[in-house]
View 1 (cartoon, rainbow, N blue to C red):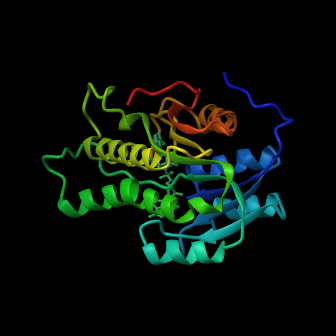
View 2: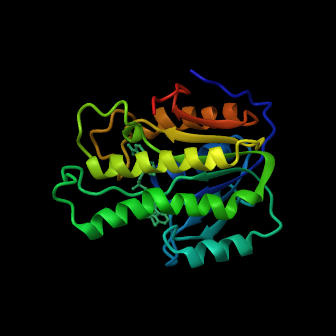
Length: 238
Ligand SMILES: NC(=O)c1ccc[n+]([C@@H]2O[C@H](COP(=O)([O-])OP(=O)(O)OC[C@H]3O[C@@H](n4cnc5c(N)ncnc54)[C@H](OP(=O)(O)O)[C@@H]3O)[C@@H](O)[C@H]2O)c1
């Protein structure tokens, strides 16, 4: 199992989609390791689990608002964060649709909602906020094992799979465009985890996935180039 030593220098992560589920757990894990977290929640003023972390880790959590599907909000956030420097940018936000709905029967609006949220919007966030990273910073996105084309032998969750496969492709194109960068880039597959999205039948608890996932991110830091990794640090076939 991968480990990151406690002597790792703490840094600051900009974490997109940290209100609940895996994003909240990633925030909590970085805080436990001494990092600062600038985390986003969707606008609307609702108190979230990230607000509880801000109370618990006083002075080390800043809460920003962002709906990743609203380009004007992405631009406003970029403006608000001008002059800030981050060691990691990790885009966690994502959605799913009814897993039984195939590409044959999904409504066009629903298809667009999933694709725009999971494929286009994370890339827009990355394109807009990437220059806030240190030159050796890590740029990460929450993908899914379901995004692997090679591993798709069962079908199921067709629309969601397609959205994460598209995200993977867009990140590969981004990496190709930035081939000379010293930044590390990672598409992360967290495993099937029991969250609101993963449901009660997920194979892993949040505690079994996220501390490992965070160690994988820390170990990838400083290693340029894009990798598609699972929560144990294993390469996922494209
Ligand atoms: N759970 C799994 O088994 C699993 C497996 C593989 C990959 N993933 C991926 O891991 C990520 C997190 O999943 P999860 O299980 O933690 O899901 P979740 O419990 O449903 O949480 C989803 C998170 O994404 C945020 N979000 C959704 N749409 C957004 C938008 N338009 N703008 C900003 N934030 C938005 C949500 O914010 P609100 O609270 O405002 O709704 C929430 O923080 C997703 O990208 C998912 O595809 C999950």
